[in-house]
Image (cartoon, rainbow, N blue to C red; front, side):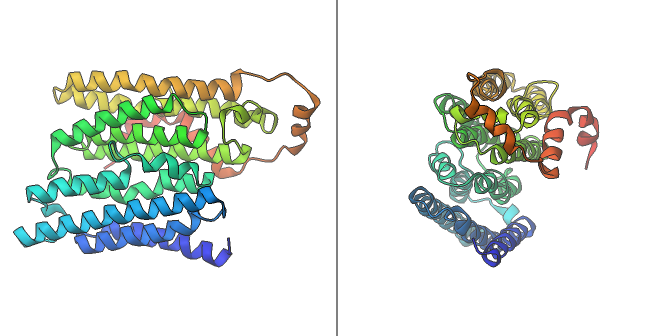
Length: 346
């Protein structure tokens, strides 16, 4: 891609995100979301492959439909209440439509079908943006409107996302699709607690972005797109493959790694809210995700193919790992001891 075009797309992504998260008017929030959508389209279509063009078209249609629904919901609310403020969403029909619009934007169940296909058609770096940065504006809108939305509907969608994200990930062999269903599962954890403790949702989202970035950057360095190629990735950068296993287990939520912190806090908060059955269901559903993360970790480091000259030649292509990747992996593995400081952060 032309450097100027890449710079314009990146700046537009930053501008759209900033407009959405800092606005209190529905029109400005919608404008920021549209800027974001238009900015990411050239990055998705960058490989000039039929799968990339298909992913770009799907993403545009889905996001355009969600944005239309969001604008219709806010207009309906303004028609009946005279309020354009984001926090003043009170009309029942508007609340239902807004829940649907934000769920489509995020890829929550049952509006999740587009997300794995688009990640599969994108490059690893673009998939990283789609799985992290592009979810920040909708998560912000969900936080601002959480008190107005239907709590029962959000809880059902959250449990369904955690369940389907775990079940669907079991049957995948492509790393991008596995991480897509992982994202859907984590969105379920964020949504289940947003009504009771929005701050905890933000902490979960930040830690999810950190862990997902570490894994995507590692896969990008080793050029690993499927499980079979992950078995030979150790010959390129052995130390990175070893830490990849720990990063995957952290994303699964195993103690004493960083990913255990959000699951621990969410289950604790649900128990405080006298939602012990819900907390139990979420904890059991996380075991589904643990299985396919363990399978990834197993392929990354525990299994070794038969040694041959073809594999050993890859030792000569050893590259130094950049600072950003090593920082993300370190934080993904070792951030749990800082949890008291994270919890006291305003």
